[in-house]
Image 1 (spheres, rainbow, N blue to C red):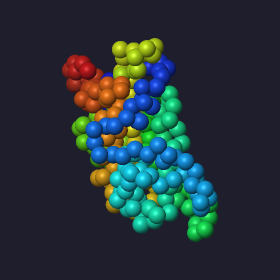
Image 2 (image 1 turned 30 degrees about the vertical axis):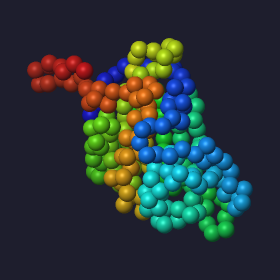
Image 3 (image 1 turned 90 degrees about the vertical axis):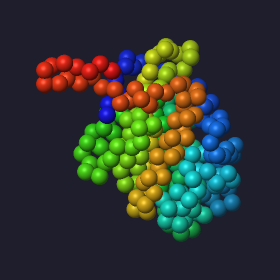
Image 4 (image 1 turned 120 degrees about the vertical axis):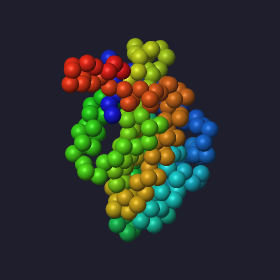
Length: 222
């Protein structure tokens, strides 16, 4: 599965940032203060009151990924700008410590051809990599992680308006417990793709198109 190549230049993601703050029509909640600092215990980030972590991840999935330590976990918004979106779930490194480590990460990268190629290379070298759902475009699932590579339109008014560029969506975990929830990790990608589609129009089906040559030298056009 490969995305058909498109001309790539810089684009703005104002529409993306707005889209991620809008309701997707699903049951994912919103938290205006979900990334504020929790001063009471000194830990970075906060616990979302909606029960949805990073607005896209179910609370029970976080419970599995943290091996039952969700009461100690916090979410932290690392990035939400023209280049993409990154939200992490963190845990204290040790008991009574204010230092944290990332155990889950939800990320969207825009105009991300290099990131897409890196994922393809890594997945090609893994025996446990499997294709993800077709509705996620070019997608891969491995123990504890899910990736989607989808062509989406550049925002209105950007230099690339009218073109599609690759977006990379991913949910990854860093704990052994995360392997137990691999199948659930495609759901945050599905919900985020719905919001992306509302703002920048995405084409998951186009991600399956590829220019290939057969033995006779013929090609199948994207």
